[in-house]
Length: 428
Image (cartoon, rainbow, N blue to C red):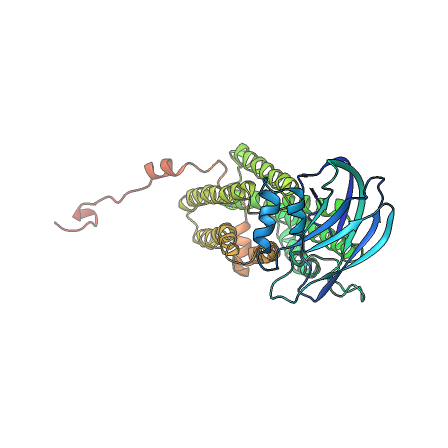
């Protein structure tokens, strides 16, 4: 038995030779809750498919989840036993072109989760070239969602919203940039924030184009989807660096940037974890109903988030203790509180997502993360009052060497001296 499909597409393409009947791949497709869904066998050409069948397993049916787990994981089951557990069996004949099958889906309160398999119990191996189109309800009217699996429905609308939000947000950002340049307080950290903002906007633009095409053909533009993720990683890495640089007091308390290697190592580690997440998602066993953060790279990314939070707070405390100007200390206090919550929101929401159905987890968490990041960009200009902004970012009176460690600062802190009474001290 060969279990096949593509985790992100409603199309299934199989081009294999000498396929083992026990197989090692599978997938799931989630049509919306509806009475029926159309399955089109566009092409099936093979010289030895006289005994082959296309099998569909529906986890929504009674005891179907247990049945699927036994079909996929129980090696003691025979090919015939696995085939009998299928919800729908479609015989495959040589040179089938454009065969149509209607999937009988009972109305249910949850989406229908399908696993697709090819089986040939009589022959140990065979060659097949099969393409399947799987549509949700609304396929006759070419609705926006008919190409999307249930767990992907809503992503297109969210991408359009955030693309427009970032585009409109560029108007006040342009004003702030002009004002800062005019007052000579536009520093490297502001240009980096601008680069991060543009990276996220570009990511949403590419994702929107990919999903718009996907809504029409079920395939989208895969290379745009990859580049969308890449630009989001770039934006995230730059944003993390900005937070750490501000926590170091660079351009706000001191004009000297120290320990650049630490930021480079953290950035490299983030990129490595994102790379691991990408390969983990690509190589994930499609039979498992899981999502991005429900894997060891996902757990590692959450742990890294907490480690970076610890570094962020340590650096910020060191800078806060060193800084004596009240307006800048107030800025650091607000900055620390708000962006500590920014670091903590990911593990909190991932934990909450554990309690919701898996077919909501991915899109709900994506929506929350996109919203939180946009709010993070929106909050930055308001961390200082307008009348204090120029004073906070004015670098003329900044310290010209690196900020000493917290332990060193504690050793040189001034202490109170008791003066004698004749010099104004307290009388004995």
